[in-house]
Length: 511
Ligand code: NAD
Image 1 (spheres, helix red, strand yellow):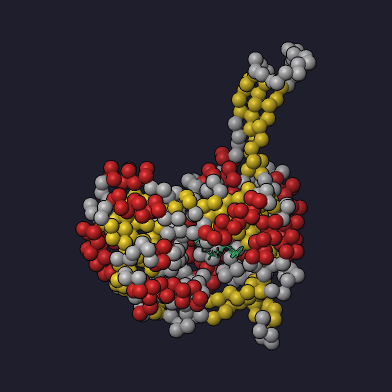
Image 2 (tube, protein in one colour):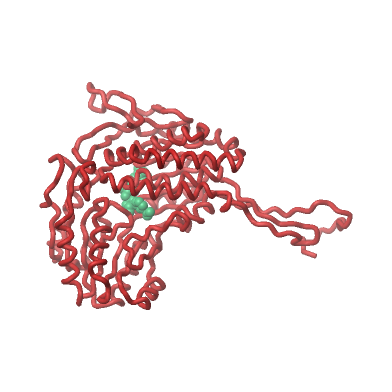
């Protein structure tokens, strides 16, 4: 199922599977003996190890990508498009195989894993439309007998660094467009669930991608820094937490690279008194607890206007009582969290909420679990009357903890959202078109939902937040994705005719 070999485990005598790098079209052990654990979160056990690359291992991957670049850049558009189309067909046909890998290493339930793959497929389909996005512009006769036109050309080797929560979708946000536009790639996925990336690289090879065009290296800060500092790497696409995103942006740009670094989030949902409260409660539960809250577009705070807050909280609580938590292969609604450490950190926020004066309406630590006792479980949790001074409100908890903050009305809610350091996603629930229109204009957030709780744009619009949710101006995928992975060249051309004007040292002007 995964790309592994057996090797001595960190503990010594026993052997464990090891997830290898993928360099130049083949598994590679590299020269580092550092490895990290890959857990089965539904069982709470280590199921395999993953290589941690050394600087030399990253260099080997970058060199493979650099060697592959000239040939891939010069491969016709038709052929590049064909590879991407075949990849799309293979991925659609074998989604269930990939979903099983996601559930096994991340823990997300099967339906959610398939949803993640479907959103990734959207970007592969978009990448098949690459010719339309990269064909440049042409001005005939800009000056007498002179034409001016623009070309969009690939950058070279690009690095992609991705987080644990979407082990397939986030790499798929980037590499299909990077590759379709003629770049070559070194991908460093999260070390917590690394197998999906290698599976995708193998599938691309099956689709006809030449060796070296997509390479995967695993690891931690050593591998990331090696990418950020490598002179052959021209651009970095990063997705992860805000402190690391900021570091990546600063360090990458200081090394002369083009960088897009998408960071963390705390997404607010505003419920106005005229909203359809059943629709809003459904949305809050779906967006708050889907993927156990481990989504950058999860709703983690509901701003409920006082007059409807009690009714809203009752509706949410009733829906939460029907959620099932357990092993993701058993048809449950929510799976485990990614590690025991993360689970314990999330669970700790329930006590913090009480200490800070909030009301714990549902304590997820008491939820019945359909799974092994040692899994990293945390049930859905609802905390009401959360003060905005509390860390439960301020921190990105990244787990199934939904906070309700009560507000007087629209103005107070807007002020809270706009004061947040994050600006990834937000949603308003209302039947008042004027209020919704005002909200979309005034809110300082990059992606806005109107009666839609998780406003992740479709593939042909671009994804990204504002403020500390995105460093650099370039959003992911959509038109901005094509901009990011290409550089524009302007050509001014004259084909000699009898009217050329002879020597003139003045600055060129147009006649
Ligand atoms: P993370 O920041 O811990 O890790 C992201 C990547 O950075 C991983 O590949 C990791 O190996 C690497 N990394 C970790 N520590 C590093 C360090 N000190 N130096 C260099 N590299 C380092 O994030 P995570 O826990 O894997 O993912 C969850 C976070 O990602 C959340 O904050 C979530 O909001 C965010 N996220 C954001 C988006 C978005 O689109 N804005 C999407 C998905 C996830």
